[in-house]
Image 1 (cartoon, rainbow, N blue to C red):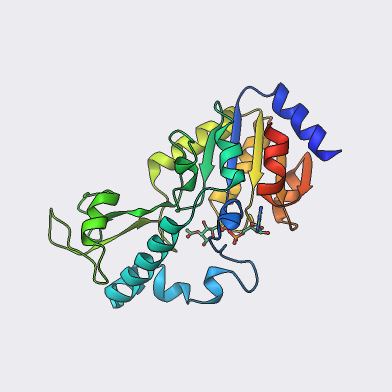
Image 2: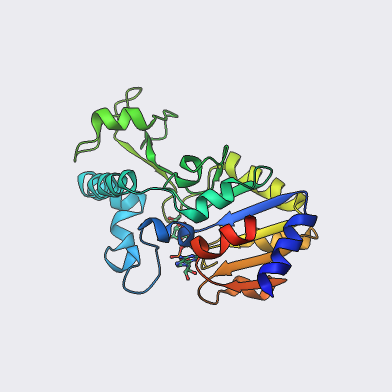
Length: 239
Ligand code: OAD
């Protein structure tokens, strides 16, 4: 059965990439982006909230939305899926999530393709990057100002239409090119360039495993597809 096949692939693999999306945090009560009813975008207009134009038009609205998401993330805890992934000590974890839960579960230096919601950076792009403590002090409803140039601070996340952080992308590409196994967990596989990483791993000879409760376009690439919730199946697979 699928779980035995995946465990066999894990045993034989030496260069593992775990590629995750919002589904791996769903069991931490963090809404996914596209699941019906609970999906985040269903309740907000992404164009107004997750774009440079949206922030420029109403910095307080966008900053306040991210402040509420940061507060929600702080209330959440990594779930069994994050902990199981953290036990794959030699794996490179490449995540689209901005919630920081992989690191909180013990994954060392996850590749955060879309940034991290708890970190601020300069909206004018002067190069300043803050840390979570900066936000703790200034996490008001109105965005603080960049200490270096005085422009607004903004969340250090990738907005629609923006480039992914080059260093993170380079790490993700390198890991996928070298991989002999890529576990794809909890992603709809709809948002590029991130969603192109499993195909890159496959082209480099990696076995592909896709784990999630619903069919996704990435299933077509998979050697094994396991329908299930990450928090339910990953502990069984990893342990
Ligand atoms: P989506 O919301 O698009 O997809 C979530 C996936 O997780 C779906 O395939 C669900 O079926 C699956 N899922 C739900 N519950 C699950 C569970 N308990 N265990 C495992 N899987 C589960 O989220 P992403 O694919 O991460 O980009 O979205 C990708 C990107 O789109 C996000 O990073 C964000 C968004 O625009 C940016 O913000 C740049």
